[in-house]
Image (cartoon, rainbow, N blue to C red; front, side):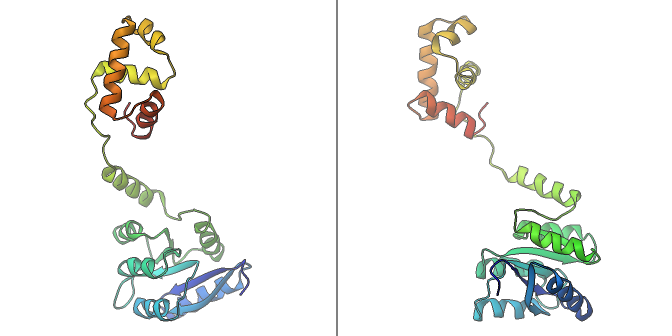
Length: 215
């Protein structure tokens, strides 16, 4: 097979739609679909026994037996590099959301025009994520909730103020003048900041402040 062509694996139980989608894919300039299955179990068996490693898996959500969402972790385990795009009849928010969270890269509505399907498959390999704004917002909100809160190093208000000025590039002398403090007092605060952040240099403190969003 041409190395420049995108290898697509299709899992869809509706015979008419599967044949239509196969035709759309294989008529395109850069896509090829050699493997199509009517259920998740058959697709997983082929991935495992034949060592298939498709670039993109088009996966129906409403499959007989194991549904599409349940297939995702097993597909990712057998072919980690494969991008998974879900196929659905309508904006099935809950299932699409679960699929994205399980590792799918996006989804396509089954009534999408052929050009949109081809573009979505190509886009997902370039880092794109075909999904509507409502699903994207739900995923973003979830990731925000799951994100670890900033570490609490016990910095005082004054220490945070001085750390911010360190990040801005001010010297100890400039910080002392700006905050109307003695040089010795600023130096003491900075030593305390280093100790609390478990760093030994100004650059280490600045890097940690930026990386962990401490300010």
